Image (cartoon, rainbow, N blue to C red):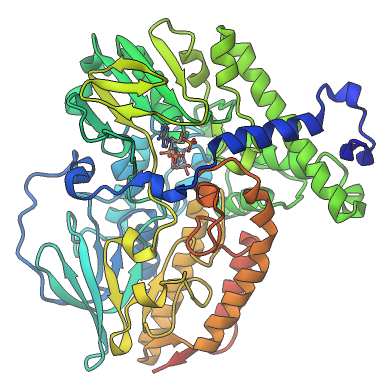
Length: 605
Ligand code: NDP
């Protein structure tokens, strides 16, 4: 018996056999499972460190080393660091020092300036502090230059440039017990102190390369998408890559980044070879300019309300109103809303899981049909169809990507899940065919699943010489995701032991408000705050208990960074350490904590 019959589905009307699709997904997954998991990637160190040189660096970066004292040192100048800076400033903190590797603020958006770079989450909820800054984005989905300009706007508005250290990398953060503050060392010989340290290193901050045989042999031009070399390609993030005229260009990778830059490469290169291991799912984008009347009609508090509405809908909530109304909310409406809420509640757990699987099949059938409706060549179209559940990989939305494959100069090289075989001095080998290239671009993503301190690039030494790398050797351990015992006045931002949100800036904003509250408490009461081991253990147990929910789903997924390349790593996996109760519930926990008396779970020293 077909298990989906339990749902009373009319298979004729459905137009596909869900059991068959299940088998096809399994078969496609099995093709891609590798024994080396995350070790298939090459770290960008040693001979490979040129891949992380900063092509956008300011040349006049000379400055004297700093030996002063600040109230708060914030490591990372992306949206997390900027939000922390902004919220701290709002509570009256005077000396805030943001330390940032890039020559300006922006984080992800400083580095990712590739042609076509834009944010796939609606601008009105993604760009933070819009009301505070009286700014309205120009389009529903914002492009990278507007995002970068917004980062600078935040920094200027909250006066975060004055104490900042740009083009500076932290090398160590060490607790000084006698002076009860942190000492921060950097690669610019700085050695300054701070009462409090906030770390916002970003979840995807270290580019990664595939350890393909011969990767360092290629003699043509090569770079990673997060360090786009416009001096070679010409043009800018809007395209017009005139430097690629007459060039044979190869790109490895077809994830969210590649999907955005491939249309521009296809337009400019004489020949473009796209080396694909797994296709992305590409849904409709439908970008449009902001309606100024609509923008002017928004009432005070609109952005928070809109953020919460989106986060609710994209984390399983069944609110009737859908303010953003886009591909993201549609995915969830599709998964949770194909039955009236009452019927849904009455389904058994097993049938509910079958019903969401069926909804997923339906959605992915539409995604695959979209490929057929756009891509003319049947074989190419077949290769571009994703056969996995939608959230096994980041869903993509684009209105020009698939069309690019109708250009006569664009060739999809489908490696059928295996990846590129070899890189030579002059090109790339796949299945015994050599593709001669002038330029090879790596759109191969970012390091995930390795130790927190390795990805940060520095260690933190707490009380009694305890290092964060040794404390977290078997995975992170925190109270509410933001602090760990042995490390007073030391706070983390990001996904570790906290919420998973489609709109990452929503999480960062909630965390920044919380941390500003803690710093204000430290100051008002003249204390250092540190979590107790008991509180940390309790939170760890909560994380573990709730994490089980997604484990089976990801175990069955095609490999990718969401499931630690098919190994569902429980230690440092991208999704293994998030609070499984949902983001809004997590924000409520933080809010309740702030509103309760005292500092439960923390000790004052
Ligand atoms: P990803 O990790 O998502 O993609 C890497 C790509 O490289 C995959 O297609 C992968 O294939 C491929 N690859 C890896 N090794 C090989 C190999 N040996 N041979 C051939 N192909 C290989 O990186 P991205 O930079 O695309 O995206 C990273 C994340 O950044 C996104 O998931 C998203 O979270 C974020 N992002 C957000 C955007 C936004 O709009 N907000 C836009 C762009 C990125 P396989 O799938 O088989 O592993």
